[in-house]
Each structure stands twice: as structure tokens, then as C-alpha cells.
Length: 439
Image (cartoon, rainbow, N blue to C red; front, side, top):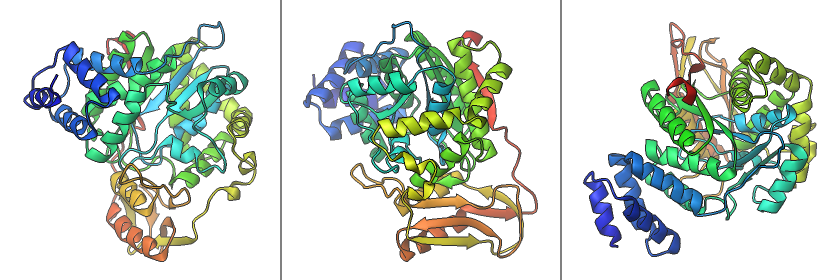
């Protein structure tokens, strides 16, 4: 097999046979195919896509590159959620302990930030001492005690995806339907879950800008997951502006704690409850959406979900005191408030530009080996639809230096638009896609 020949054929729009694609992928795992060759292949896929057979071959190769977990022990149903990525999306921090509190198991293996979007692992690592790199045995122990565990991909689980994930982040190949679908579904199949809900974002801050593109991705993933034996569904959720008010790792943990305690921003709570209810229905532990939402709301407001998260932090080596004292989380030395220069209605807070500004500030990565600063980020002090006057606070900037705050302020000016009217109304949850409803 010549890797260059297979890359050329995919570049020219040909579909590779299963044995050919598998040989290329196995060669990458063994080291015979280099990073630069695989980067070229990923770019070819970005432009040319994958056939159904190629997509299945890629997904199964990722699953079979490592261990596949199983939960056939007659215990609670094992379920999970995955987001296609957004700005300020800290739903996983709330959803995993919430579902554990209502009797499900959530063996959540998450990723780091991709492009302008944040990653659950980076958020968790802003908690002092929190270890996302526990081995499989410890992972199972934590899951048995808490009902959830939140870790990175272990070397045993889908190791091929971990390498492809890092390449996609720095080669401009993140927003590819087949690459996103295979990455997400393969990890969930390897986790051994029986039910999966996909949070597919659309809008400025999403990898899929238009609802139709998000719908196509959602259907692809639901069909792929269903073919692999999972009960799968997807929600299309809006990402025109950040979810919640916090953008940045420690800041988002603070906001997640508020939500787990029954408070927090309305939009964060709504998306978390809708995704969690979908999983309760898929797992068969509730029969109606209304009943699921009532059960979940009580677990948040009654403190049960927060108790689970506190125990999880402790068992994964973190400092549980941050729950009662969030000031123990990392904080940036510079805090500056960006104020409105005029009056009107906040018509736009562009999630993409805000996410990029957060990466420049140090909250994300431009290269695979960049270090993330857990303390930096933004707080949205105003939201789209708010009436503001000159001098009204818009965004609080948390930065490592005055110079970094200057740069961020300049970028954020371009991200915020005032107008005579508010933004167009877009439902937070636009649509549900289920395999049992024909896609």
C-alpha cells in the first residue's frame, strides 16, 4: 500500500475499498503512515467526504483500535451525551452528575478544546488536583461509587481517535460531517453505553453554521450510532451567542456549580434538562418528557446533583472545597470591564469571535502543545436583547496581562453589535431527531 496513492484517490473523489482504508488507518496506528500524510488524508476527506461504507470502516477501525467496555451487569443503564462543540458550553459538567443523581450511569469520556470551542477536560482540569487521566480500573471504581466518571480517552479506549482528534484541531479539518460523526460515535460505542444523545449545535459559534447542515450531521450520527446498536437521538441547539454567561475554563466551572445548585443562567439549565430528559426517555426510566423534566429539576433544586459532583471531584483527586468556595478556583490577575460606547439594544454577541478571542487570551489552543490558562476568559454582563446605554458594562475580561486584556477588548468590540431592535428569535432547542422516527 502506498499512502500517497490512497490520498490522491480520495483527493480526486474516489471511494476507497474497506480493506484499503483499513490498511491506511492501521498503518497510521503502527507508525508506517506519518502525521503529515494523515493530515493530507483528513483534508481530502474534508473536501470529498466519505461514502457510507468508508464511514462505517473508519468508525469500526477507531473502536477496534482499543478496548471496548461493557455494562452487562444488570446495573443501571449506561448512557452518555456528546456535544459537537460550542462557546461557553459547560453542559457536561452538570449533566453527568445530574443523571447519576436520578439513577443512571454516565461513563463520560470527553475531549479537549477544538478550534474556537472549549473542551470538558480543560474545564475539569481547572479544578485544583482534578485528574482526568485515571486508568480503566479506577474509572470503573468511580463510576460504581458515584454513578458517573468524567475522564479523557484512556490509552485503551479508541486510541486512533485521540491522534486524529489532535490533528484535526490544528489542520482546519474540524467541521467535517464524516470526521465529526465517526469520532463521536466510535468513542461512545467503545464506552459501552446503551443510549446516546447528541447535542448538535448550529449558528455562529458552531462548526455547523446553518440548521440544515446541523440536521444533516445529526441524522448521520443518529443513523451511524443506531447501526452500531445504540439507542440514539439528537437535539439541534442554538449557538449564535455563548451558552450561559461564562467563557473560559474556571469561569465555566463556577457557572456549572451554580447550575448544579439550582441556579445559573436560564439557557444553560434549559439545554441541560432537555438533553438529560432525552436520555431518561431513551433509557426507559421515564415514560414522558414532562415526568423526566420534573424529576431532573427536583434533583438540581434539591442539591442531589451537586452532592454527586462534590463526591466525583474528591474521588478524582480534586479539591471539593471549591463547591462551597469557588474562589479557590484559579483567577486571573487582570479584570477589566468592556463598556458600551453607545446606546441601543444588544443585537449580536458573535459566539465565533468571542470564542476566538478566548483562545487568543489563553483559554484554548492554537497548537496541539499549547498550554491552557485555566483562569482567563470572559463574563457576559449583558445579553442579546438587553437595552444598554453608554457606559453600560458589556463583558468582563479576565486576563493574565494588561496587554492581553487590550487585545481581547479590541476583538470583543467587533463581536458586539448594538441596533434599534434585538436579535431575531431562534429557539434554544430547534428540533429533535430520533432513529425511531425515521431520522
